[in-house]
Image 1 (tube, rainbow, N blue to C red):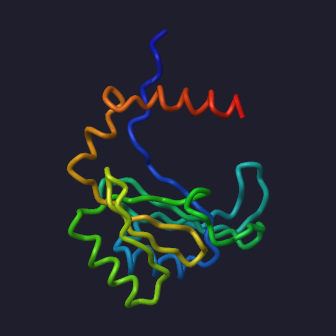
Image 2: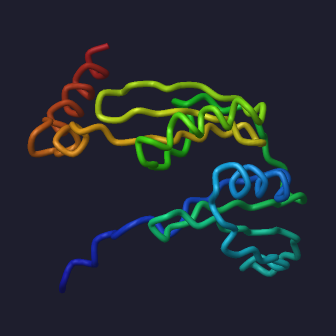
Length: 166
């Protein structure tokens, strides 16, 4: 039997939102991701009645960032820490400074730029507390992210040994 086809790309990554209008203003009006689709879900696959809006914003590569507004289902919206949850989207290097200035001018929580060596990043907080990173590759990015050169597996295994020894 043949192995299944490998995962090719993200179709969408989905998060909860508390207000689809505020989410649209941030992701479409501020970030420039066009609203591609929105539909109401009125019944779950198990037959339970519900009222959920599922919306999709298109990225330049054809993938989507999606949101569920589900007022009848409790969710703990809170300002997320970068290490806990964030979404990073790639932009051209020349887009970082103008977006940083635009975020500040619009009074959006804004941080950066941060130089991570392989990329430079700026950060915003969306209306529901999610951290949104815009990142631009540096010239060393591709070589640095190549597991045949960077020893990623060895680093992961060393981390696992370190945890076991602690």
